[in-house]
Length: 401
Image: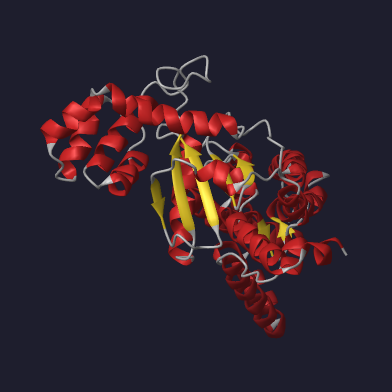
């Protein structure tokens, strides 16, 4: 039986759009690295770089964009015979149906990973998801073209092929899901870091290094062992979205590595307490920093620090009092401290310390003195610690050899 080629032509056109968008996504993915920001990196939440650069950006060591490109090219080849003229429903259509169904399922897995785990939105990924959905809706009606009796007879005569196909499908789904949602690779040596993340290794090992004394002099907010060989000094802003991301990643990092010493220092991007910025990027940042100092006065700095980052979109004065009540702080004392000029002066001391070591944006982290501007993806903190451990244990002359 012959059919109209219209649906195949629609499927072909959709697959070609997918080829173009997958190619663009693959180019962006290949360029992601230190210093590169793509056109679809629009902030903390809408951030293609964060999603594509995460562990969910690869499947079995290959970019998911490359897998998508391969699927769409295959879809073009499968749709082409039907698009060139009416054809009988055959293996090409069966393959096309299987391809679009599998693509839709895998797109759903990756969408859940991006939104539910990374809490990020990738516009390129959403575009591909939309193309896949349209592709599925376009191709699905082809299933009605198969005559049940004919298909049943063909299927019965090919029991081995059916078993192999079913096993392959289950293996692909299980393997793909595992590769998409698995934990980060556990790297334990510098050689492994250099092999798995060569661009990060080169970038990180060439970062400028500041003396620890310059970073910690006058600092009052520290946690972790005082004698720890691993020190992270964070210059941060409670209203900064990227600082929130760094806060969460550092919290996880310290949970996994309790031997780290963390030092927090204020650097609000608000000229009301920071003379090194010319415009108010975060108008409530200074007030939030002052409130954190008032909580510190009652020995609750870190608890209040966590509340501010978890609620960084609500840092107006009324909310700051609400957080103080949540921690059962003495409110009259808190109020007096909030309006005391000396509290603002303490913020200024951190700001000046940051300016002396070159801080100009937030977050700026110093990992054993190595200056990192901006928040890293979570696995890179582990890589940095491995590099620092190696540098501490390896003589300088040996490192150069």
